[in-house]
Each structure stands twice: as C-alpha cells, then as structure tokens.
Image (cartoon, rainbow, N blue to C red; front, side, top):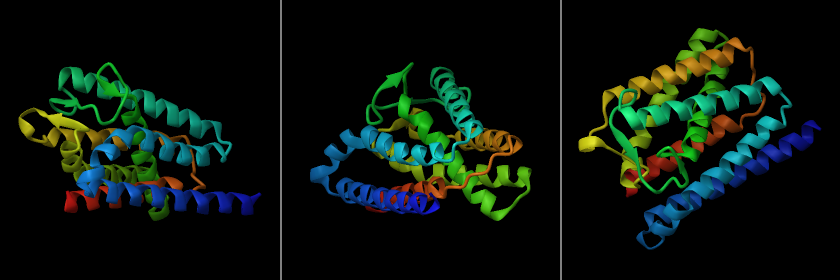
Length: 214
C-alpha cells in the first residue's frame, strides 16, 4: 500500500510540474496567452483536485472537515471583503477565475485553502510548536501573496481600487492564515503527504516566472 501511495505521489508531482510548465510558456507566448487565461479555472480545478485526492487517501475525516470549514469561511470572508472593502481593501474580481457566487470566484477559496495547507506542510517540517507553526504558515502565505498580487492584476484575476494594493490586504491574509493554521494545529492534524507544499512551490515558481517575463 505504501509503495502504491509513493507511485501516486510521484506521478502527481510530475503531472503538476508539467501542467505548470505548460502554463508558464503558454502565458509568456502572446499567441497562446488568451487560451491560457480561458483555461485558468479548469487548470486550477484539476490540479487542486490532484492534491485533494492525496488528502482523501489519508482517510482522516478531521482533516477533510478542516478543509471544508476553511474553504467555506475563507469564501465568506472574500464575499464580505468584496462587498464592503473592510477586510482586504477595495477590490473586485475579473473574469479570468471563472464561475462566481456573490461576485467571488468559487475557485478562489480552494486556492486559499491550499496555500494555507502548503504553508502548514512547510511549517511542520520546521517546528513542532503549534503557535510557531501557525506563525510560519502565515508568513509563507503572505510571501506567496506578495508574489501573486502583481501577476494577478496583470491577468485580470482581480483589480484594486486606484490600482494600489493596500497593506491591509497582506495584514488580513496574515491573520486569516494564522487563525486557520492554529485551528489545524489545535485539532492535532498531521499531514502525511508532501503534495500541498509541492503544489505551493510549483505555483510560486509559476508566478515568479510570469512576474519576470510578462
């Protein structure tokens, strides 16, 4: 069984790397960029599905409960944020991320969960202290957001009022990431799969590449 899981993990890693490499070159090439933008929500859904499958394979109901709780609450925070501007600042989503509910793409909450989970996966390799682990997770999430934001604006994921990314946005994601990582740690959850942090690493390389070349 362990050997089968290792094979699945290796194949999943190869799949993620190939998909995001295609995405990098597809976005850099002006002739295929529109196609890549159209494919964005489908690509995210498929790649996140691969990582989510690795979570299901752990057969941990508490982990799945945390996952969906985090998704629902981060999605609600996004809805409140878009409508009020009170949480992250004044912003609105474009059309690139696909189907929306209450002006928020359904896919965005999932990506936020995987960023937090990737940060947790990294933090747990560094420390066993639950509070420090949550702090490291929050820092990882903010660093990722710093890389993501300028690219997201260029690709019409979302736009900020007056074109300025407020400090409030990063502070909010720091607090939110810390909170959900803290809850995760208090539930005594422990990831066995490395896919969440690998997925976060691959996404980070993807957005750094686009930040440099487009």
